[in-house]
Length: 157
Image 1: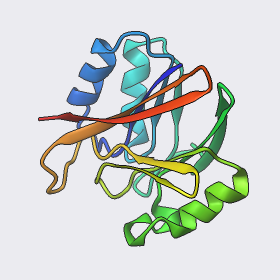
Image 2: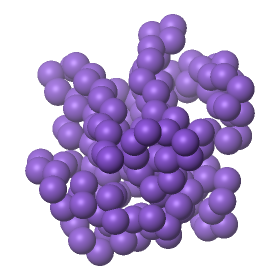
Image 3: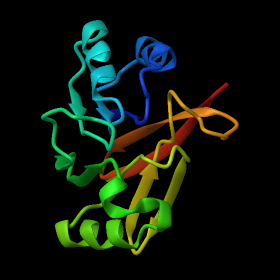
């Protein structure tokens, strides 16, 4: 299973839509909030299933947190602001542990990060639309295959 992960598009959808158009064999697309309205533009150009979480700038009905099970892995989706991720991942770690998550996906900081803590993989895809001082825009790619988890951050100029 191949998954694209976006966050923090902030109404700047050009790069995000290009990635979706140019990605082959995508089975699922995740948008981790800020701006959920941008995710609707993804749905206009592809039939790939789309899951959306709302962030701190979204005033929509999407959930703030969601646990998905895919290919035997549990994925926790959140924007991250409720867990104060800008001050560290401790709160998100404990929530992930509580839910039995294998992978915690979050955004909010606009800083891409891919690390493992206590057997849980934490992926922040960074921002596809507002890099806030970062050198590159970024997004995440996840591959779940043969009981293996492969997580990567992709960078765009």
